[in-house]
Image (cartoon, rainbow, N blue to C red; front, side):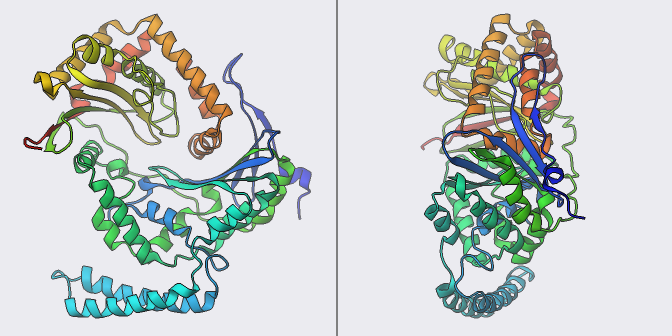
Length: 510
């Protein structure tokens, strides 16, 4: 029996209070029968709406052999559907099927045979595939989705892939939100991955550009050494060898598993009537079938048990990085660690439960302890920072510093200084003035974030993991941190057997 609109809305106006006098956030919720959640934050005024969709999938949902696939999928979702991006779908599909068959033959010849296969055969198959790719181009409408959005007043068109989530964004006039729901639900229902092989080439070139950064490979190896078992082991862009070998069949399987309504949330912020948003969501997103429930990742990061050290050299500036394993977002120790990062590193250090970095990497003057001691007073370093990152399944605390090579300071000298400061905090904690300073700064930043364009992202990403209320709970946890809490977490996590020290030196003559 069809529910009435009043019943189907099931909207609760949720004024979330973490404690008396706490910051509040008014979010309206609606859950479709297929499990998709719609979040709405009405802001009357300028008749525009920020529209975000987040899927609970990122690089941690990959495995060896398909690393980088979530990022590839993000790109491919802009290649159109049966009704978008093509002038004649039937003719385009016929050519695409032939291309797929040839590329599968090339794949087996090239990668399934130990000797790399028959080079002449591969060259001939590649020649045939390239001819078909050229014949397909007249049927393809480039940037069809982008152009349609822009013709209807769309701005801030973007997408992103992270370790844990993938997002698609656009801002539209209030009377064009229905267009967003039509197009996004069509992409969920009828994504068609044309130009897959050429787009893989684009992504591999994107990785090559990253590789041109002087210390890229070292940083990649440091990350892989730090995360021994969990899928945070690889970068979002994936390993180059996997990018070469990922197939369209891999992509389709990945899409069907993760890009389902019960694995995503849509959020709307702006000038709109919530009942209209719900009616349109029921009409468009409600038609997408529910998929199988998605299992959380299985492999957790085990205790390290022994100190790790890694050394490298190359053309980049000499630097030191010290990393420590810490708990994931939502753990009681996450707030004290974030406060400590702000005190040592001088950045905001705010609680960002959806895994964004905080503490020591922000703009402005660095007022942290490490900068004061190592850069200003002892003049041993040109930079010094600290950061705490609480992700969904793992956390990390990083110290970074670059030595004064003009004074023959070595990274090991900075390492000793940082350990000395850590030991001091273990014994003495931090001052009341330091605590209040970072708490005031964090609350001011948090309040600004609730008023600015980042609100949709903060709420949407948080909802995927611990629920959107967690950003309020995290803010309250931050305000409750004491000096004893900081002492406790410093003693617990800053130990040699929980650390990786990475020392990189500029190669002489460069």
